[in-house]
Length: 112
Ligand SMILES: [Zn+2]
Image (cartoon, rainbow, N blue to C red; front, side, top):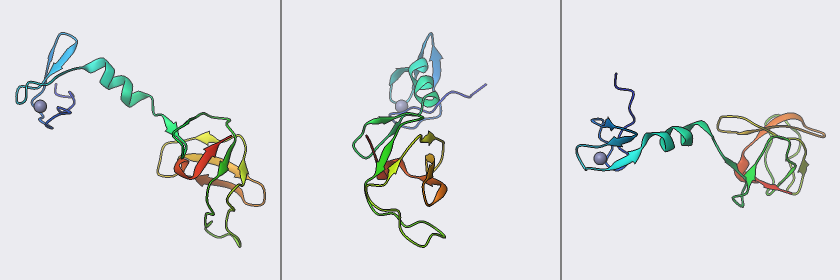
């Protein structure tokens, strides 16, 4: 079994478990496997200011955004209610008046 993560320091694939720690034989780096696993499970979504976003939050758009297939751009300051966070390049699922369902990037919004 070798589903152990590579060494975060040097990228070595020869890591091994030592109790609750993972050890890299190449650079002698030791780290906790549990902390590593938790990091991967919980993805934190952050807005342009680094505030954590949650499902159901209301955000505003911080810059004009072109919308594929729409006549006009999504204007800076547009309020977006009840966002839903999803995995992906565009990580906010939402519905915007006049535009309908669409996806935004969290880096272009601000929590209000
Ligand atoms: Zn290493």
